[in-house]
Image (tube, rainbow, N blue to C red; front, side):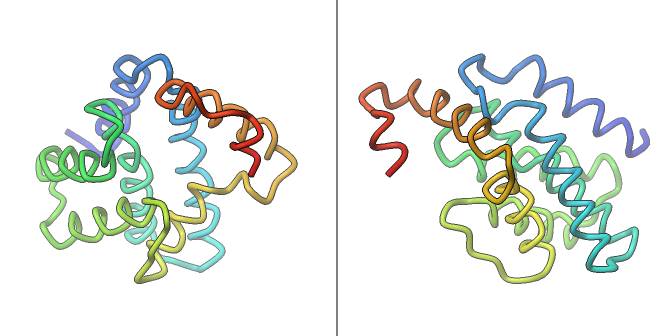
Length: 156
């Protein structure tokens, strides 16, 4: 198997297996986080091998939602640990990837440039003209598990 197979496999699972109520954490969000991560990594002049690890971390960062919402970062890391050895990722690389996945947990705590990049890419919309659009998608998603959440509370 080659590395493009892993993207195809995970995208297919995200598109088909994520719960429908995930209006923000959907396959499109993952694709956007990958794109923004690559953009930031290139601005930092990272190597192709470093960018490869960042792309894989971005690919898996929300895959745990397939299994369940709570502690989805842990679930994402477990999926990566299970699948990535098949694509010749080493234990050390997987550890770095899991660090990046965990850096997307709120509140974000980062320990290196790779984790900084993933954490920033995951929240890219905060500083853009698309803020209202993505914020609304996230509010609708959260309403599913917190029906009592009011728009006023969300805005606060």
